[in-house]
Image (cartoon, rainbow, N blue to C red):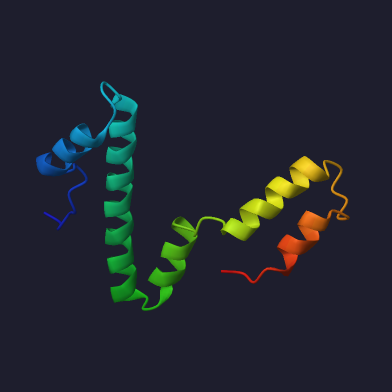
Length: 103
């Protein structure tokens, strides 16, 4: 038998999710359980990659769990949509946002 990672969350974690979720919000609990299982699988894959292809696991993890857009990127996107629906870049707000340093 192979050494497998469990993909079923432990009962203690499930009880935490139930306690933190809005009443009767089973979708919220299901989403957390799915994310937990996906994270377990990602970690198992990264461990295997680290053993057999050192360094590749970092690229794999970054690709599978990309960073969310920065506040600057979110603001620029919102400004382009609200100020310039045609994509013209003449807005003072947009120019100011573009000058901010990336986080």
